[in-house]
Length: 306
Image (cartoon, rainbow, N blue to C red; front, side, top):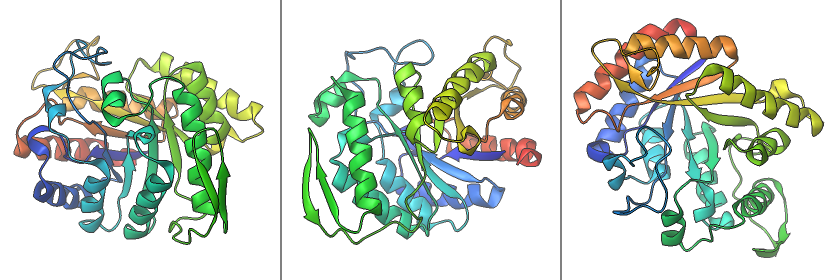
């Protein structure tokens, strides 16, 4: 199992100097991957409830460092760790421009990029980005088609419902061939079917393991129905955790608990089949020193699991 940690980018951690310093330190600790999320704003009266905790969007999301910029800083301060987005809201960007940005980051990092894409959950952010909320699945399908063409075609041409690209040379290609791995998020049947049909893996989140296993089974069945080998897909899981000094009730772990409790969940997820798990504590700790202390504790406890 690969073990990752979230790059600092939200709240008090949204500091480019800190991002570089912490990224290098996390690599030295032995982490396998660093991950960045994607938020635009924190509405005063949100259109939708936050999907975690008590349904209130963490205040730290009001200060959000751009994920691709954060990973660029991380790339320049590391040599070995992979760099991933979990998740990048791809629909807020024109596909051709997003493909160019991701290609540039893959080249800059010498092929260490994992492109994790989600559809988000907050309609306010779509309105702010000027992107329709409706028909997100169809928009994502065409986005993936067009980025694939930019990454892999000698002559790029696309004619779809949303975008048209005349026959063109787009010769800047990713370091990884034919393209960086694509991981897709989502929990609906349509989202899980899409993962199995066309992605390289699924971006899950911490949840009761029987439920996680059932959703992963849906991905595997979709892959088989599409004529693909399910064993070639990766299960990557995000754990947003509030680390406590004393053990929390079993019903609260892994979202709330000690490093030992969260680590026990991660190891159980490994036994269930998770290929990679990464921890994010940015919204539950405002101390930079404490963030690194937690990261070091996890690295020590989970090092043998890699």
